[in-house]
Image (cartoon, rainbow, N blue to C red; front, side, top):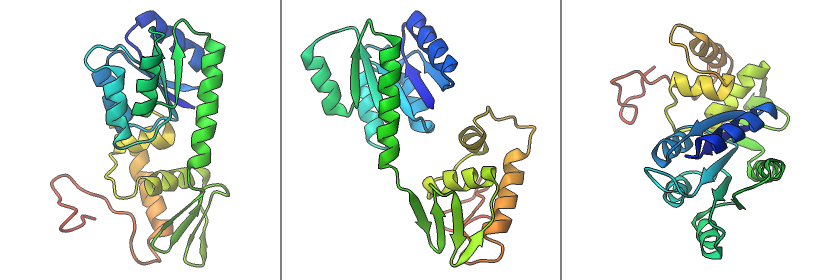
Amino acid sequence: MKVLIVEDEVKTAEYLHKGLTEQGCAVDVANDGIDGQHLALQHDYDVIVLDVMLPGRDGFSVLRALREVKQTPVLMLTARDRVEDRIKGLHDGADDYLVKPFSFLELLARLQALTRRGRTQEPTQIRLSNLQIDLIARKAWRGATRIDLTAKEFSLLAVLARRQGEILSKTAIAELVWDMNFDSNTNVVEVAIKRLRAKIDAAFTPKLLHTIRPGCRPRRQPCR
């Protein structure tokens, strides 16, 4: 489970980071609303823990900005036990609400419930032109031809298919597929893309994988 914590209270953020990491989660932390909104929009998380009272931008405005483009499950934290605040958060798109102080085990159970709910809403198959991807069986076809993919190649294909139409940087791909910080000295992304292209594009049309070089204008002329 990949979790984003947006919390300005350092002790609370550290407590959540430690507890969730010990549970095997990959955890990012932002200590203000501006950084939290940036991370939430730029990366894919299974669930977001969002404080209401934040410097820079409050949790409600971060939530509204997120809901314009994504439906990532959000659990809001607040020190204020007012019905009006909970109603506002739910109306703005929050999936759950927890009042401080809280039990870590309760928060963990709520996050797990939210991620299960989110997974049931995801499509089980993706079709792009004559490429068909079965996310449950982890299989792919071009037309009637089965494409033999390694586990990592399938994960890469699934990420690209889910984000079709977007231009993904090497950094974003490394984080989404390998869950690692990008090292500019490694060519792991280029090698993986080359192998995937050879399997799903080389013998088929139309070509589905495109590399956009800096300075190119993909809307007028795709860059290869």
